[in-house]
Length: 326
Image (cartoon, rainbow, N blue to C red; front, side):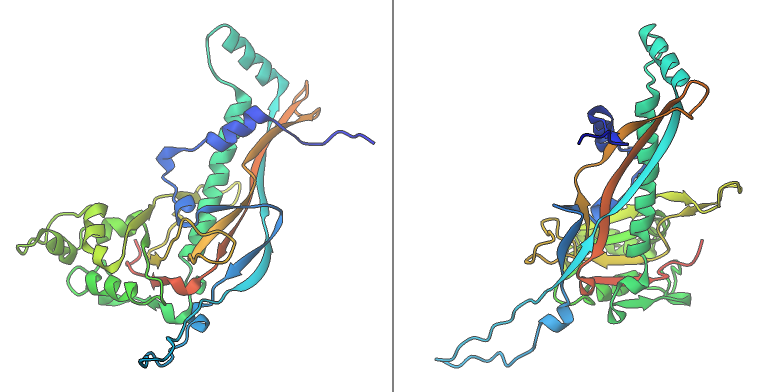
């Protein structure tokens, strides 16, 4: 028995959905929680309770004795991807007019591909906020691997605070796997990069005025194992529909230090703080809709199937309220 599918995936529109990326948005979700392919909607993954996985046995070895072994353990869990999608209606009259403009070489505009691009822009922003709410949330981390700064300890206090010791201690605060990535907001970085103690540590000679680059910051903490800094710049509108816009920063006034392994998958063996399970590629297509406009039209739909997972929370450290509120 044959039947018509209500939603037909279009290869051309899907290619637009896959390729489209607004570089100016500078989103970091895919770097902080990289995508890992899974083969079905429901999948198995492994959580690494590192605090329970290691013991501290007697390490002394006799001349003929056996060397004690230490092993990782992981707990197999089951999860499933979530569907994230949006659609936009386009009247046939808009499509026809765009075709006429293109035929006359007056425009290159295609309302269908434009709709896919704008919808993917919105989906990307939703994902950025979603990942930010995970990474910059103290409940994501083990209680022993987070701290709260206040008053003179906050890194916006250039007289009393000490970012080198605060960050250095945090780098030593994870279990087994040292952080190799810092996640910070643009506001936080703008304050941290001007901190007199960091400026002097980089430039020397008692110089406390100026600004350091991310590369200089990484060089300063290279010996601690830091390799990457991700600076979140995204904004989102927190107002409800119909209300005046209220733009908020997606990334908070905090610092997250995490161990990120780009080779890790849902299979056991490689430990990483977190990743994003992804089923298939982004898709896009059209649905004929007779109720769009006077002549009918189409609904352009696009989306993805992903789920963000924190799989080794002991491999991260959180500095809450690292900076005073703006």
